[in-house]
Image (cartoon, rainbow, N blue to C red; front, top):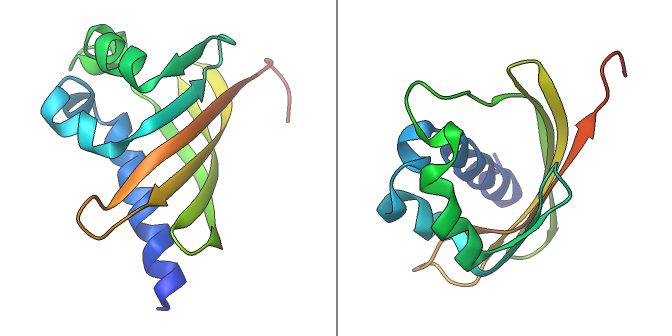
Length: 128
């Protein structure tokens, strides 16, 4: 395994953690995974900032044990530059599919990998 593989694996681990309802329901576990300059364009088309996500996510249905779960598939990653990883994958949540893209960056060893940008695009029913 190369250093680049380790970086991609750490970003994937962070991405999967952010889909875990236990992490999503805990600000203490969720907050360290987001970069303070985080921005998301959700599948709804809405734009979210770091502060928006910290305020919104614990009340999101995906943050409760009985809420919908995001089932990821085909996760791929590439190191774009030192300290910057791009992930792409697809999720299914109760029959709603989305194609997703995330940028993870590491500014220092102390802060570790954090999601810097995320975008979700809905996949219409029947689309490949």
